[in-house]
Amino acid sequence: MVSAKNICFCFDPDKAGDEWKKLAEEGKKRGKRVFFLDGKTYKDHEDLSALWEHERYIDFTYLEYR
View (cartoon, rainbow, N blue to C red):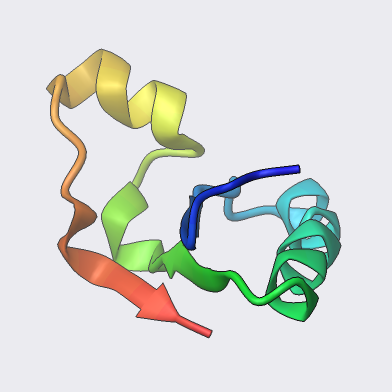
């Protein structure tokens, strides 16, 4: 059980990442404020790991509350 009130999910922008959104829904049911990274965050990279590898910076400006 997570004791945090806010959770930010950083799912890969692909089909597998979509499947994990069910986990976020469970967090919402438990009263957590759930945020996601907008697709703009990833720029042209396939995932956050690739973004970090190439830019060494991740911009969390584009959080979406759902």
